[in-house]
Structure formats: C-alpha cells, structure tokens
Image (cartoon, rainbow, N blue to C red; front, side, top):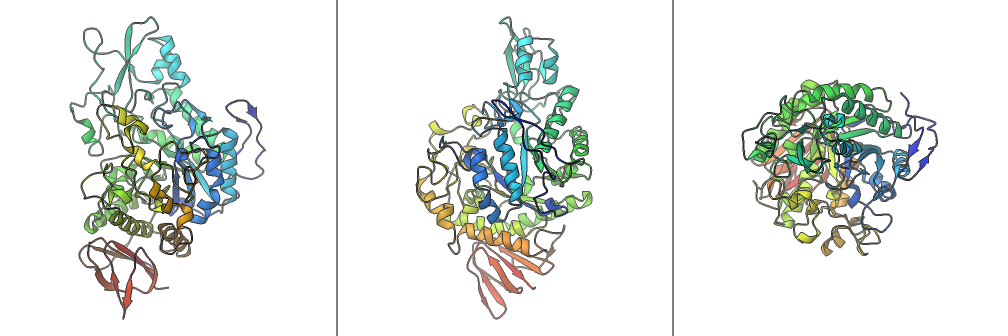
Length: 570
C-alpha cells in the first residue's frame, strides 16, 4: 500500500498537505531488511534542540539538526512522544494521539520533519503509547462526567472499591511510580465513587484492551501515522495492555522488586501477542519495510523473543544487556543467551546502553557494580568515560541492531546534582516507587561552547546544564582527534563499510585472557579488555579502530585497561 498524506490537521486549523508523488520512503535508500543491523538514534525532543527560544526542544529543532544525524552515520531516528499532552509524565500521558503538542509544534512540523529526514536518508520511528492515555483524553473526561455505568468507563479499568463503603482499592497492585495503582474518583454528584487503574501516574489511566473500541482506535492511529510516512513505531510498555482475568491480587507488598524477575498479572500476559499479530497485518500493507520495536521488560530474553516472532514485532529492546555490568563473563553470557533466544524466531538481536529512563552508561560505569540502572552519584568520571567508549565499540561490533541515546556520542554523564526544585520526573514527587532521578539523563545536550544553553536554544534550557558541558559540546569535539564524538563517527562509518559488522546472528569466540572478550565475525575481530590492567593479545590483522591508545609490536597488541579494539583481515 502506497502512503497517502491526504489531509493533515494541526492544532489550530486544517491544512492540505502536498500529495505524495512517490511512496513515503522513496527518498530513503532501499536496503532490504534495513532494520536487522540498523543503528537507531533516540531523540528526546524536549532536550535535543530548541528552535524558538522557549527553553524546550521541539520538532523544528530536530529538523534543523538532521544533517548532524546523517553525518553521524545512523540509519534511523526514534522520537520520544511529541503528542498533545498535559506533560504529567513528559508526554507519555497522551491526550490526543493524532495531534502534536504545541510545545513541540504542529502536524505540519511533523510532516516536514518526516519528509526532510527521508530526503537525507534517515528513517523516522515514533513512539506509540497504547497501555494508557492521559486523564485529559476525551474518552476519560467523558467517562468521569457521565458517571457509573457510562460506556466510556468500559474502555478503562473502572471498578468499585472494597470495604464497607468502597473505601479500599479493588486489588493490591502498586503503581510503578509508587503507591497504589488505583485512584478513587469523585462522581458527578460529589460523592466518592469508583476506582480506576493506573500502573503509572494517576494522570495515566490504563486502557481496557478487552474492549473492541480500544483496538479499533489504535488500528486507526497506526494508519494515521503510517499515512504520514513514519517508518515504524516504538511501543511503550509493550508488555502491558493485557491484564490477567479478574485482576487478581499479587499478594506482595514489595512488588517493584519483582518487576523484570517474574511474569506479573499486569505485565507480559500472553494476550498481548494477539494484539501484535493484528497490528502486523496493518504494517505489512505498507511499503518501505516499516517496523515495530517493543519496549518489553520481561524476566528473560527467552520471553522477550516471543514478541519478535515472524508474525509479530520486528525488534525488542534488550534490557538484560543494558543492565549487565562491565564484566567479560557477564557480558559473554548475556550475548550468548540473546543470540540463542533470537535465532529460533529469526529476529535480530538489539543492543542498547542508555535511554531516557536510565542513568547514562558513562555514569553507571563510573560507579561500583551492583547499583542498578538509576544511580545518584557521579563516581569516577574518567573511568566511566573510558568504559563507556569501550562498551560502545563492543556493542557496535555485535550482530543485530544498536540503539544510541542522544548525547552518548558526546560522552555525556548524568547530571546527578540537579537541585530538587528543578526536577520534573513525576516519580520524584511520590512517596515510594522509582528513585525518580530520570531528569539527570534528560538534561538538554550541548551543541556549542558558548551561549545561554550551549547551542540548545537562545532562551536557556528547561533543565540546567553544568558548565563543564561546554567542552563536551558538538562544537568542541568535532574534528578533535580522539574525542568521543569522532570515535562514534568513525565506528559508524566503519560499520557501514564492513559488512561483517552488524550482520548475521552469531559470533565466533576466540581464546582470550581472563577478563577479556574476543570474537571473530568473518574478516573482522573485536577484542574488549574489561579489566583494570593492560593486557597483551595477538594483533588480529590491520587495526581498524580502538577506544584507547593501543601499542602494536611484532604481531602483538597491548590493550590498556577498559579498552576495545577492532581489527580487520581484509
């Protein structure tokens, strides 16, 4: 099916877009199965580039920086939510799935961004948030206005409370952001009434995916954005949506510790797979190899593989890899398990080190192991950067697709000392749950050495940037030998030039000293030293790239601590 941009409605009025004369992705280089080894760059729009000086990033800002992303060498851009939203959870509370929030622009800006991205050879993946809406979504507002018995309440999970007067939640589920997963409403007559389910913030009521209207609505939303020309969707909370029949009690009062370790009655239920099989039929109607990417927190990579069976989604984030410490044995185990799990379903592995929900890996690796993925201390920044650079080369050498979070190519650390008064993570303001320190990885990125926000925009930034970021800016690092930005550019260029990088579904492990990973992939060899000491290994051909200084003498190479090297025999 050829994409058809027939009519676009912006936030103020209705406009006719120019009809597409070719397919939506005609100007993007056609490469079959492009997504199997793609490098996809995550843009967090509010923190990427600000075009109008209001301190908040926007779509026009992203559009203006597309040449930078093209020259960086990535294949696609994934945009975090920019839909109309009260911003109770940074846009993951959607009020209108077919409109752009005015802080980011309008639908014409989205259309221009998609078109321009295709012109420079970049594909565009947008976020989809199907587990829950905003409490300002028209369906939910009507459900509250119409009171008990409203058909609109059936599209969410409204339930009477327990206790003599319904004063207790319907079950014992806890919100991911802390506290009960239920909120009691005040009915139109002013009396305390039913409760509604929200696995995240109270402003994010969960949809009832057993209701046909919900399914119909999201099929329509998919078509709307596919007709706009997007190349795929990253599905937020892809393991949610379907809840266990009867919404049974979990029985644990420390439920958050169970997340990711067990199948929960509200996560990773088998019914989600029926939804994705239905969606895949829609996607396959469109040309240009559009894709789905799952954000699915599952107990094992084997359960993650269920989401990427041939008739379901294309990719799923590898959170087991993201959470692995900088340790050769642990890394090898998760690499092997990932490849083994994906091979039977014919899906590519994915590799990711950072995103908008976790502490940047330059800071995680700067701290002692075992602290998890949300860390409040800066640690040893020199050590963290050295390990982050090495981890990047290791990740980009593995078979499959890799994700890069904006600013990691600059070696940005988390900002761990933000004052409490500037924080905006909703979990920070709740009494329990996540640490609520995700703001540290969301600070706007620096483009220049000077300016009110180091080139982010002319009017400051919505979160303060530390002064040392001037020398981490794109301007400071561009053309500077050995800089992290130039390392990324070189690695991504090499990945395109050498077919063995990224392709395939296996690695050939080579003998290596303890604490060192070494593997061959065709004419390419990667060696990663995860130890705190230098090691001597065989030189496996012509040195292609290294994350640190490597000395080669008479067929041997001395790798410093926390260093990864690429060789080629071509």
